[in-house]
Length: 155
Image 1: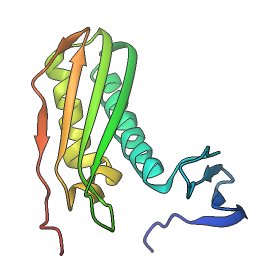
Image 2: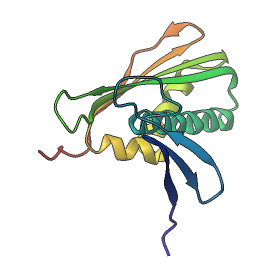
Image 3: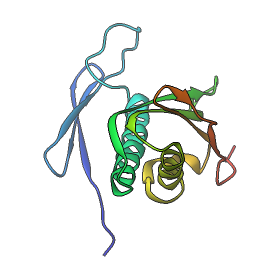
């Protein structure tokens, strides 16, 4: 039987929803109609955070297996959206920032493995849009890695 993941989304107030997974974790989604203050992630920001978190977990795991001495690591992500509805992402750019005893080639290889083999969230997004991975190791910018969309978007 295939593995499954389930979530429950429950209205709290206005456009605030509590989201619980099957392991008991909770996050809050919120979307203000009038650009006012919010109390949680928008669904698109959550999707972007999930993608960045997924690749980050892969990359740090791979680098640790490579016995790289990572001292600090962060990933930021920017999703570019189309102007018309539905305002889907059309491109994502990850910015990996590593410091420590990290070989630049190992960093690039870990990112490549995450994007092409391990990260299911990025794989789903890459089905319809390109993803660029910028990387900085100990303050030095490396050549970005480009991952084209694997399928042609519909519409």
